[in-house]
Length: 307
Ligand code: ASP
Image (cartoon, rainbow, N blue to C red; front, side, top):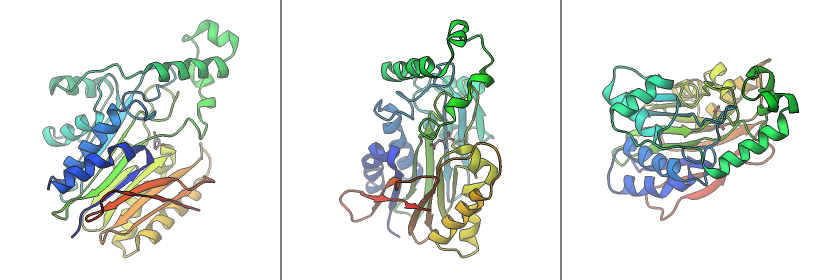
């Protein structure tokens, strides 16, 4: 079986690290982690790790998950503050603990214990954008009292498709045929502190199973949590759907959601033969993604199907 890599647009800066890892025979999980560590360190990616967007109080809270397709083991962290490599912390949750997900202070405690790299994740650019957003979206009274205002009253302007997005995700099949997937994000910009999206939720934002394929989702995580999208698409693959059929059906599930905040979602599916299909709802332009398979020099950029 040839090795494969699929990365979304935010994951692009990590693709070369993934290719290098896969070429040198490392596992899919190693390749996922190597790629996402590059993304997390790059301040030009404004929705992941250092340089990522903060929550409504100006604090960068990161989330990440990783899943092994051979064993269905998984690890995740959410609302993690002050550590550069959320993906590595997620992986160590999987490797070293009996748990799947750690959040908030507990996740930070674990990161400290395993010697993860501490870092103030708010870059100057992200701070300036945040301060501008506060000036533009809060009333003069709220600004005068800030941050001692009921956050739920000033939260809604952040529910904007332009700010409520941004995640790096990769799905990889290594040379040995094993699949791995991973996601890292600073999440929906200016959201309520403590809000978790789908990125750390196994079955919502990520699901990987060697027997059927691999799925990852981006954009409005509240929707894919409600529909269990990544797990649902994997179940459609299990029933014999192609990547395209599984992706379309998972997006149809999302279209039947009623109420709550609804917006764009991108679903990335690869079936066990290695055929990718990526499609979006709620978007006008095709979302780019990167695809590489063994034998190619560089990954190629493709566009998601707009449904
Ligand atoms: N799904 C992420 C979240 O809900 C955001 C994104 O992927 O655009 O936080």
